[in-house]
Image (cartoon, rainbow, N blue to C red; front, side, top):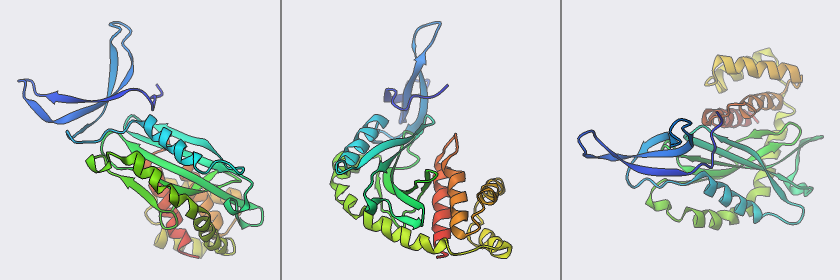
Length: 269
C-alpha cells in the first residue's frame, strides 16, 4: 500500500511494561483504519528523543512552494517532479520551467539544462532537513546533484531549528546566485562533452574514480551508456544519473550515489 506522505503524524511518550517512562519517544503516522475494530492504525517511523523537532512533510512542501514563489513571475514556473515517502524518509523535488536563457544554458548544442530544487526530510532522526538546487537535464529530466556547485542548507531536528521556516525564507537571497552557479556547472560540464572515452579510459574511471558504485548498478549504467551511444565523459555522467534518478523506488542512497558520480566525473574536466 502506498504511504501517504502527508498523513497526520505525532510524537508519543513510551513506557516500559512496569509503567516507567522511557527516554525515547515514538514517532508514528496514521496509516488507515482497522476494518474489524474501526480503530485508527499507526505506522511507527522511529524512536527519537524528547527534544526531537518533528517537522511534518506538508510543512516542508508548503515552505518549498513559498521559496519557489519568490522566483515566480517573468516566465518562471516551478512544478512538482518527485514526492517520495517510505514511512521514515521524504524526498520532494521541483523543476523550473522558463524560457529565460540564463536559467536554461546548453552544455552542448541541443542539450539545455535547467534548475531543480531538492528537499529531504526524515521522521526517524537519521538525517537533517535540507534543501539545495540541482541540475535538471531537460532532454531526459535527469537530476544531477552536486553540493560542490550548489550550496546545501541543513536544519537539525532540534531546538536550534525551531524557526527553520524563517531561516529558509531568509536564505532565499541565495536564489539570486543560482544562475551564476548553474553557469559555472555548465562551463565545466561542457568539457566532458569533448572527452571521448575508449575502453582503457572507461576502465580507469570505473576502478579509480567511481569504484564505490556496486557491480549491479554499474552493469545498469553500462547498458544505458552503450544504448545512448554518447561515448564521452558527459555520456557516462548521464548514464550514471539516469540510473540513480529515475528509479521507481527512489531512495536516499540513490541521491548519495548520484552526487558521488557527478562530483567524481565533473572532477575529470
